[in-house]
Length: 160
Image (tube, rainbow, N blue to C red):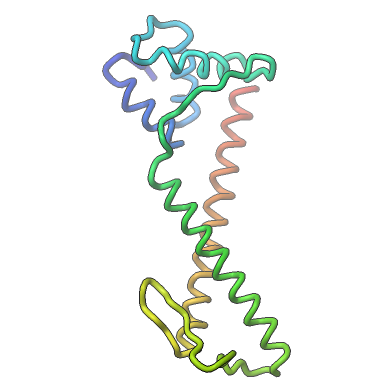
């Protein structure tokens, strides 16, 4: 891959979003170690040179990166929502053990749950929403594992 002054901004944006391939990462490292770097990009030189030289601990440099992309924030919020739902499900599950096999859902008069701004009082509907949230959490975990696996492969490629 050839990087030039015309496509560097787009590639950097993709890099900071975590959407570059290993080949693109290596091309960025090469660009920042061998090219005449424009003044506006000089802040990234230490970071990419650190990557290029195997990320040694003694040369670690603090570099301010652009703000995280919205998909990262969205995943974070989804993760928090999933954690809350799993915690609620665990609490209901524990209380079910104390009440026998059938969960009545009436912990106290006026119990309800709010989902996406809608107040729900029917326990069966609430249970359905919890199951949906648990499935979403499982999908997020699988996506995270796939991303971690991809990152590990990229790191192995870089140092082999």
